[in-house]
Image (cartoon, rainbow, N blue to C red):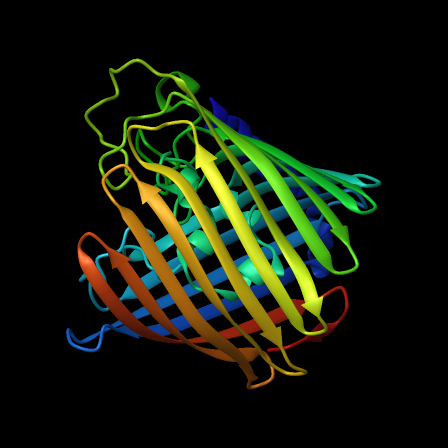
Length: 358
């Protein structure tokens, strides 16, 4: 039923806005990275993301985002629980990240359709610099719930409210994320009875270039987790329960061009998955580049893991960047040293402005 509703809404918006396609915006983002642990060879990963949007009228717009992932090997470069690369996943020929309608109001917006949590949460400038997955979403959430977290998405509603220095965002999603476009377990599925329901809310205060965040995530219908925090598929008949995650993080300017990052999160589930997480980092900026150091600790039910990252991001080729990174990971499995070099490039075409960066 939900799949039919979204399909109808999408076709309606497309039909109404077909005569205004000249105002569309197209973004292509390509990321390629080479990883090595310095003694077991290399792994090469490629991610291509496409974002398309066009307005239907002054308030309503249509949004679509998709991506493809290709890599040379499924071999683990490091025995880590947090995943040192935030683009590493299985090979995916094509799938959706966003598909829906966005309604812009005076100081707020409402999105209805297909979406994932990574589009809106934990996306501050400081966290976006680092390649460690825990900077993109805390493991107290990503390791405990089978939610719409990269590379999967789900049916959801997202609401944003901007009140000068205060920013409020709240969302609700189908409790399990998918990436298939057809079949019983597809991305259009909305079934709280079996998949559970996931809601997340964030409050952000910004002043003089400093940002302070706090939030809560609620999950009803949580699947039990194994020792590394991933869901098991054999427990769908077990009784569902309400589970909560609290978090806060801050980005504070120390001196011009130097910021400090601090993070903390705790999950009410004490027996499985990731129970708490904390991290801190230092970000340095120059006129043309930026870099930083980050260290975190995640307490899983089976073990604790400490991860460190040193990285620097250099602009190149007008719309691209080159980013080397060094990761050190320590847990019960041992110590891992991982080297990475990432290249990213963006192409944008905006017909409304009659300009292109292709």
